[in-house]
Length: 343
Image (tube, rainbow, N blue to C red):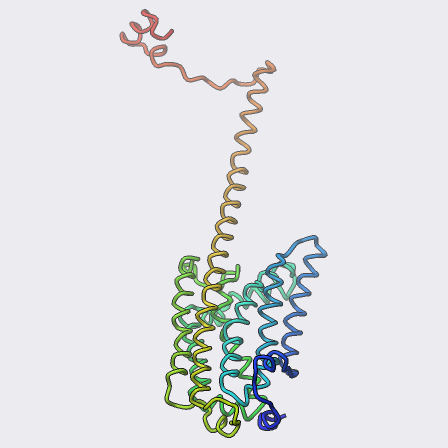
């Protein structure tokens, strides 16, 4: 069904209609089922081995990640994105930021590597991809940040977006592009797998998230203040008496993009700090276990020696340290011993 046909019978957009209006997007539904199915398989494998996976991660993956994809592509945002610009703007920022954040909080890479035995070809293939040069380049913080910014600006300030509104398959490709490019930055920041360079510690990640928050504000500000109408010809042809003017519509869309980007930045930063705390606790626990292993033989030897001495087994006794005047052979030592200083 084309965008013109959809818009022809749409009533005035209200908060109630935005919440109640839904449409099926088979491509998005297929993606959600594939991602959800793979995640569920990983959970089942861990459960069969008696291993636990944090419920909060599963909830974030399903609720925020997959739920974000569903809302962006099948809710009232998708129903009205061909008539008004601002639902399309919100739709795009959900795919570009909110859904990738939810998917990353689910930590699907760590789940996959835990669920797949190391000897399985799939596990070796996944590890090879994670350490490959292509993914390392795309997830490098500077590269991924530039890709996110370039992706959003290309959508709004090239013929890409108006063409996607006229051609359904290209519109679906745009959805996928926004989701993938957004994930290239968000996923490495929160995953437990080493996708980032060694210098990119958790404090550095927190700084990068702060910088990214500033970068994410740029598209919203540019859209809100631009005198160039984005897909102006398309939206002018869809205009209804109850719609805001195209200029106001675009200003609302840019403002919502800016607001959502800044609001989501705080939970993103909190999530990075939470991963930082978790990582430090894991390091401390590993260090304590290592110290326990290294000190155990020494403790066992000392215990064995003490037991031997108590039992009179003839085991060699450790030599006790004696005061210097008891062993000194000079005149000073002899005088100390004569006057009983050692006693």
